[in-house]
Length: 479
Image (cartoon, rainbow, N blue to C red; front, side):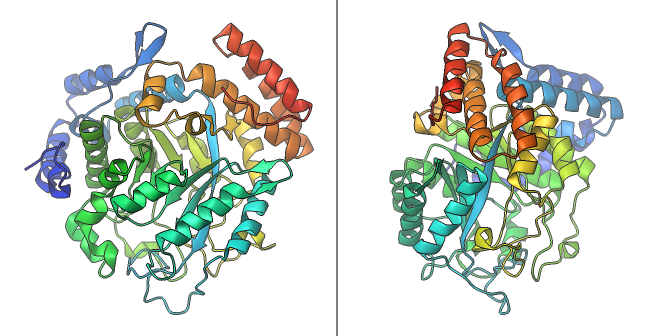
């Protein structure tokens, strides 16, 4: 029985509710009167000095996803762009993954780290090796990391993860510092989530992979990850442990995309209903080739066009969430979806354990093929040439603006008076410390233009002074 307020996975992700939703969407995919009402409901409304978006239910959003009328799809894209601009402006947050260990006791059939893969080189970074990786990332200009690790209670216990986080935050190299560590590790206990919170993590990220329980159990035939309910209920335990920024995601291509889409939105609705705040981020990875993984084995792959539509519909349905796309995707694909809803991207990523200290990109321990292999400086320059502000900002987390406090800021439109100047200041730091000559030239011109767009006059003047101070060698200003 479907119940978004239930704490049981099979009730807040109810299979029959998803099937009924897909049937409803199929019946109404050409119902223009209903579709117009849905689009009107989702459109931004002016409230005081800010903008409000109501978002959509999983059923309403599924109707939009099912509709194939070209004129309507164009309206969906335009609305997604409007919502993205209203809440995230032209800022794109930058991050990089850091793989600590590929030891894993699970048997996930889509991941090369599965326990049966006997020819992949297994590696776990020592704290000294982590320092070298972090320095390499700092030398690129990164300020925000997402740490990744296989699930192995012997090789990768929670104590190892906590020690690694402490190491990462301790490293100050030249002007470099990692200011936010997001964590993407296996589902764990409330006690362990409490320890992660105390260690100062940013967002806890956990991909569901698939919301289809039968498929989930087949895709995870052995190991602790086989337990669908324990995995699906992880975000509730994380929030009980005090982590108020959590990140959802499915691995598109494992199951039918319309089913996954509905399940993902139901999970977001559940978090909102129970905890009063939805997901801080939603990631949209697709199955990619890796060591002994052939994505063609999975018969649910989706085209770039459908992928773009999924992203647009998520942005409309969950307007305030951050949306993440990684270097799994090509430059051309990332270009298209940036304006449709994506607000965070990785740059200069290496998905192998110890990959950042290697001169040549290693492939023997990669979790998946990296399609966009450009260096961070190239990605930053590319974003600016497209009119975006690459942001290395971590201020909200460090100022305690997380969970419902961040969402409140976002929903009232006040985010523009802090996120916009923070993005420009962190970009200025990157230009001063790490950027190539061409990137510096484009970046300084962009900062000059964008400073004038800060709505509040006092904030604008303060930001200009901070920018000048950064130019003169000072660092780490924030609103």
